[in-house]
Image (cartoon, rainbow, N blue to C red; front, side, top):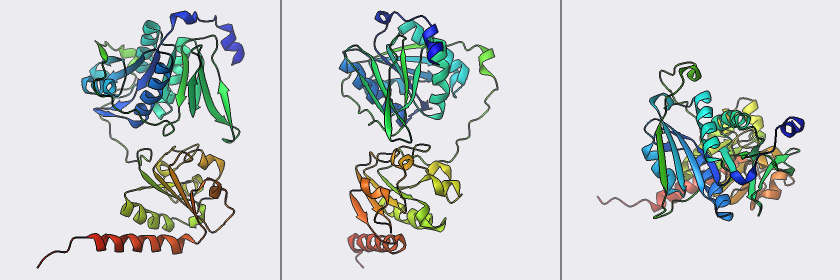
Length: 349
């Protein structure tokens, strides 16, 4: 790969400025990973006094473009066509590649979602540049060089990767790692919208209807109750689900229960699952392998419930309960139910 990149002539870096971000949405719903990308993109751009440029693609995107601007984007590039209502790899890559050629961003970021990963490599090839995937730390130096850090060696080390000679500098960022952007009152932004005539050859198969799959989005949960191999079987997750429902949380899992079929993969937290940063993370029967820790270590408060006092998870925990979860979880459930009963208003006869 190094030889291939070196064979491509270096870019005139002076022609490139600003930070670009690809925005994912479904209809009028802006996806949380994209709000996170706006946040880190805005941070990088403002550190070097440049603009944040966001790319929105779809059909009838006025509402999404407005919301993106309210989050702090300076320029929203909106490509619109009925044929772009659903994600399509080739036309989306063609449009973004065209925008990069026209606006020449110094940095271009995408969330490392399924669609983001699909697009990123194609855009990089089209733009004749490199890309750093699945980043957990992004920064920029005084020379406007992107400092892209990604985990390696089983999450034990961060590798910093630089793209010194080619532009744009591209990276995908792991969802759930960066704080989401907050809306800025009275922020001034510009929307540049264009109608797109999509090349039929790029469309491939025709999408008749999109049927969303039921899945669990843990990244937006304020509380996550996660189980591991220590639960002993799928019935343990029923107990965790009852607790999660009582406290307004979501159920997560380490990888082994998923591999054993105790719970579906959309509940998996970790390097090969979802990355979360809830206010409260309750780890039940989880040993604490590096791959799992990578996906939840940014939680504000971590509580571990484990019979093993030496479990690795305890090193990352704010509170440690060394006990069989079969005693702890039912006691918690009963205490919460009793508390809710006590707080319930008394009905007059």
